[in-house]
Length: 172
Length: 172
DNA sequence: CTTGGAATGTCAACAACACTGACATAAACA
DNA sequence: TGTTTATGTCAGTGTTGTTGACATTCCAAG
Image (cartoon, rainbow over all chains, first blue to last red; front, side, top):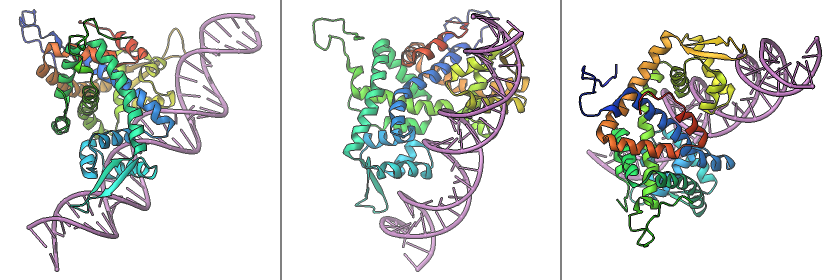
């Protein structure tokens, strides 16, 4: 199951679909696995020093990206339960990295903001992560980067792609 | 140190380095985050039914890829502690998905193999994961796939890239 | 042959992060 | 007024990771 070979004459139906062989796909799968480890390695080291984890990083990242976002919105983006997110947010608020303000229009909502300390940690984390991404982009070049983004976008679930594309996008 | 600037005429090196702006890098970071969720979503659903987790999937995947691999080799690839891996392996062995054979040359080593049941689960998991990967590859096209792989490879840690490239590579 | 170290396995304790289920509160809405 | 929505919290559970300690087996060097 899963071979794309449809041309019994060999020669792979004239046009090259070699990039869709099971072997190529397996390489792609392992590339995702190993690359994701690299992708998280630098922030993980910083977070470990401060006894935070990836969940804190994700919350900080998306609050930074969308200041004033609500808890519910964050839940949708992160795809975890409110109990799980709440544990993380509570510690970030207690530590003075995140501020939670009651909504003006709808007083049930809590709007989340990074404090100065929160912004500082965000910068430290994203500097590390961007640095690795920048090096990878430089090595691969602009055309490769475009392909990288295309494949990743096609790999997302529909809802996640929606969140991804909904980002404020100052360039591109 | 790593600049791709080749055009001394200035002008942002003539060629556009726009793909290295912080905004572009942030997009790449979020693309990795959202795409990885999609990447693991299908196997996760299958694993949840069988009350296994991603750690089991990873072990099964790499034992399938390299039948007869030793525990120590697996530890290096997976980057976890032996205690953590051992817990996973023990359950897989108990459930009859993995077989552990004492080494012939060196009897301290355990060589790991998937049983028929193990191979069956591996196929179920990797079919699901390959299917998503294949769709993404098809949508993006061969050139994009090449860029995708280039960027991912550049993103890995040195050791991980070593493991990645050490794979038996039947095509490309 | 003895000993040191490597490879492996196991026990215990712990922490991060996810889950479910249940319940509480306040505010918006119909 | 009654229902739904947004949020928070408590309790319990499971997976996956960690450290530290200790035992076993066995290769290899002295």
